[in-house]
Length: 419
Image 1 (cartoon, one colour):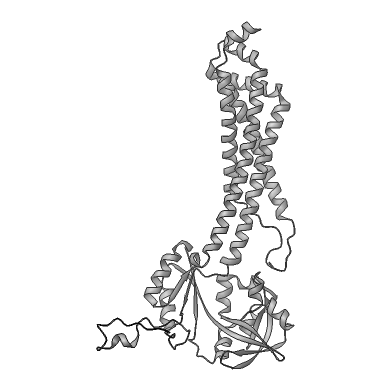
Image 2 (cartoon, rainbow, N blue to C red):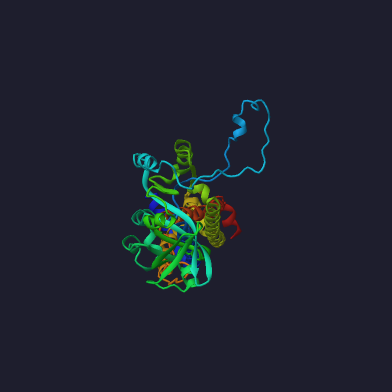
């Protein structure tokens, strides 16, 4: 009964100053709305940028890097075994870039329960011949189906059909920038020359666009068989193994494990994209900082309004205390007022925040640099709505706590005597 009476008194005070109450609620609503919309947009932007990199990057990449031999012939000599041998101008080992014993490695990876999938790849430098001009390029020989299954290859093929790379012999999908430089249309045949001088005609069956223009000016894709034929190598010639894991967090540990086990170079996705992750963290931090600042500003607005209400209602507070209400009861009344403003404004803010996010999500965003993006990116993660709700309650509670404590200490005798 007592709490019901406190609630009725708080409601009367709220309605008696409804204009001030409305202003405070609008402040909370605006803050929560912008908090939700800002975090949803910035998180969506981060996800978009992450996907541009992560969708095309293996969790672990195995490759064979040509390095100078760590053990030189002189170190095996009995005559000089007790000497310090200083060797300069060491040349790299004379061997191919291919991963040796590829069949056994693939079988071992397929048996590893932590591995989701494997996509073999061949990377080779070539020249695209255009009349009398040779343009530098890179051909990526891929297993078309595996590349599409694990790295969303078809999403980046803006013209033509990605599966034609598998079904059409001696075919190529050119980077958009490379195709524009060569003025090569789908169906045209271009000449490709390897670093060894081997020449091969390839039919253009599509255009590829990654969103990074410097890459699209040189990069192209062909099937594994076509690339092996171009290089004059056997069917077991593979230069890269792209590994997708069931748990990306295991990548650094497993990269070290595979490097020792298979005696190849291994790089994990975190190491390969460390600078990119730093940028994502900073953008997220700025978003949260701005959103929380908006909520704190709204809290100061509620604090000022409740302070003014206390000065205006000193007579009412004195009468309440004179008729038997304790300081704790008065404290509860003003806390109830603050939380009412926070709950009402917060709920409206969540609704308007979702509405504003949905509106942004429908705004067209067409750019040739990002062919897979059609509208502005939005992340509807429920976490943002929970954080907004909690902060609106905390902010309004503390905004009401200090004025409420001041009201609870009002001496009714001093107020009534002054009147």
